[in-house]
Length: 387
Image: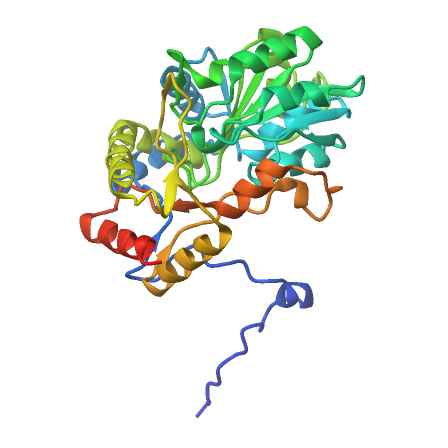
């Protein structure tokens, strides 16, 4: 009789694979309350769309599902045209390759690491301008202070979907003849001054990662409001192709697959209801949070927001850490988003960014998603206030 023994965890893996660090498990334990939950459409609705891809035999190279998704996204986001891509970082890299041209890029220290990393990856130099303490977006006055003859571009983030001061930034950029890229990873469906937020600037980039309000598993998009730039972005996201046998210039593979597009199309009909549910719980946070413990972040006036996150500012980092400990004890999983301030990245020269440094130490995103319920909310409030 053959005796079966338990194989070691690394059995069958290469030496490199076995020694690679394990990524954190993104799936929370049963009974925990995560900072967000991925909305999944009814499986039958997704399968029906996938069946279309199977029937056509086309899984990539801008099939009919990708093109349909682009049309619906352009309508939903109030923009003239959009290019669906494989994730949210490649659009940033393409935009920087087109507009930054290897120069200095004035950017925010308060964003996800992809914003800064994309600048460095494209062999440009990040120049940080500090943020506004009220809205947490890049401070236009600080942008103007950092402009030099080496400046080629401005890259700003709509933090938590909170719009930058796009009017002031546009005025500064126009006066100095600088293009503007907006990292709009959090800004799905946001409107500002009655316009789709992605209609501002020269290029906006989106993320459709599974943790976002609108998701395609992995995915993203690039919005370009100038026809000549849109044409360039289009060929750059498809290896530079200008037809099957010709090449217009240098490109990369940024295309979205039909399977990812199917997920987006299946989710699209549910977006208004998802945002409504998030708004309900965000309103409860505003009403019931003890302001002596922490305060909500201000949303810029004139904004029709998407409730992408529920960020709160504690009065000290010590109180934040105590709240996180209490929540961990209650199996609640908030997130220090964004921490650390990006000027502290190991591959950056450390500048003095006092506002971003202070905010990054005191900010915490509370759980906010479509599956929250009254019991969850009570657990969160008890842990948050028991300091």
